[in-house]
Length: 257
Image (cartoon, rainbow, N blue to C red; front, top):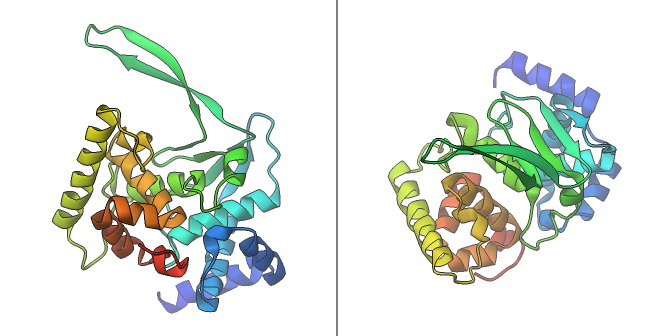
């Protein structure tokens, strides 16, 4: 970061830094953030403050956009980027909030060329180059170390989209091997799909078998929320996640592998 960029960043932090008491209280209310070091909390506070300054929050469907919800979203989104480029959420500016799950129209064309119109019920959605959409009810249910986290899921899609459409293959860091990533994620995804097709109960949410992009997003949820379950089911995927996010939630949360 050059001198001008540092000056601009420090100026923005002076204007937008979340008060320490407000930040500490919000962190205490999110078990997902247990075990962060004081230095990591300081970094997280700065990243959260900059994200809140950079993104606009819009209400839809009669939602009330409360400050505590905005802060909870920013805290969990910035946990993903805690040891990454803090500009990782570049290229888009809006977060749209619904009070609860929302309907999204969908069109599909079958092999005969007939268009079928349906409506999906969603807790969140990410658009390439566009806004990120979340259900407030599902935001409030996230971060409890229970395996579900709509914030991590949708922001993982945004990281995946940094090099194009979401496909489960985000831009890797220097020193990471793309062939190893493809091998480890591909094997786990194929295994999950086979188990889902066979009607087996799976530790990983069957929704992850939709496509590789959803597998990456669901794996991100598990990596931070229930790291022991991901490490047990797909240890190679857990190891790749460690390299990608530069974190080890198993150790931080004190959970045995």
